[in-house]
Length: 351
Image 1: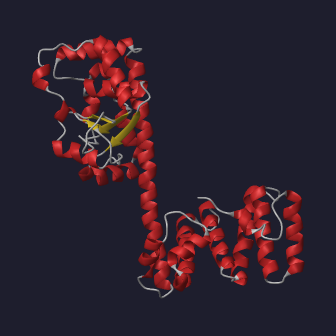
Image 2 (image 1 turned 90 degrees about the vertical axis):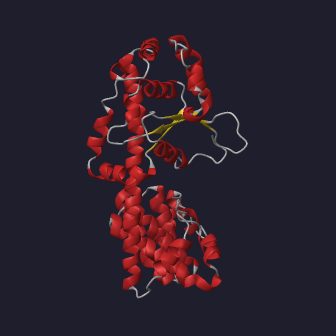
Image 3 (image 1 turned 180 degrees about the vertical axis):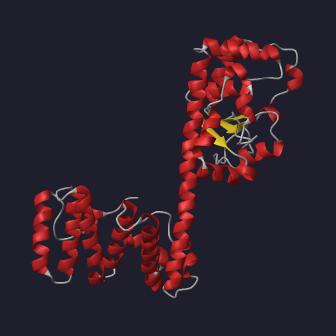
């Protein structure tokens, strides 16, 4: 299952046989694997009729089977139902997770699409309760259709160090995924709030539906001004400026005026305005950036000195040489850059 041409498996699918087939396929489709990924999916690759009667041994589980999981390199766990995942009660699935951990294979966990919204809502409302469910992973209480297989699996676990360390390994991997899922869901929700704040800003500015158009043009992260202007086109400079004002308004609404994320937007807007020759408009933004850096990092920090150089460049461009000179001296003395061109270029914001 996977690439049209087939090939060696690159993703091993871990799922309980009780999981509805459609949910398993949904999880595979939504896992974000490379287009050329090939999946080892036992429902399609394992001939259970041919295997019937064969005895599973601890030697095979600890040797060839474990090595095969490592050779595949990635495992995909179908996490369903998320309230009480059946896979975490199945001895086979727990052993597959154990092999994934001990062979340093990548673990990807996927909640089927039809249940993901409820799962993310639960993460947001009570993360601790969702995480607590993972604490009940226990090889000793796990089940399998074949009692002899359970015996072999438990013997393989003992050979690997015992039940308790095995439980810890499995839970550790799942908790890491759960934390990442919670952060990702939080970022998506916050992004929606930021977009809503941006729409409110556009409405206040009397620009109607321009917000969605601008966000569609903007890349996901700040880029250098020349690339931004190329994206918008020479005839849409006003929209480019508006886009940066949108970003600043959204981050102020989401984080507050002094948050580092907000200051990234402050610097980007100031850089945009300076590149357009609007130095008087950029000046208060450069001052704001410098004051915030002084407060957060101290007067001698390199980022503070670069902010001083940015402000000096802005003042010099307005022929305010007397105001710019002490800032240039300060920046030069501390290694923060100096004229000409040492200001804005030294303060590229990477995000």
